[in-house]
Image 1: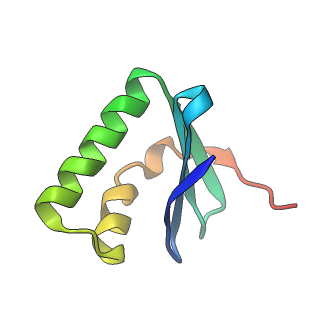
Image 2 (image 1 turned 120 degrees about the vertical axis):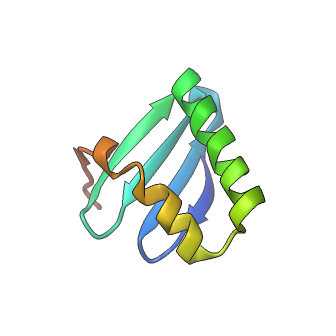
Length: 78
C-alpha cells in the first residue's frame, strides 16, 4: 500500500498488488475501492487534473469530491 494523498478531507491509497486505489472521505467516514480499468481511468484523470489545475490540497479535494457518489462503504478505524 502506498499513500498517494492525505488531507484533512480525503485519503487516497494505491494498492499495486491489487491494481487498485482506495478513496476515503474522512468527514463522512465512507470510501470506495477502484480496481482495474476504473482505477486506470481514475489515476489518469487525477494526473490530468493536477497537470491542468495544480496540486494544492484545496484543488485535489475538489477533484476527489467528484467521486463522493461512489463512496458508499463505511470506514471503520481500529
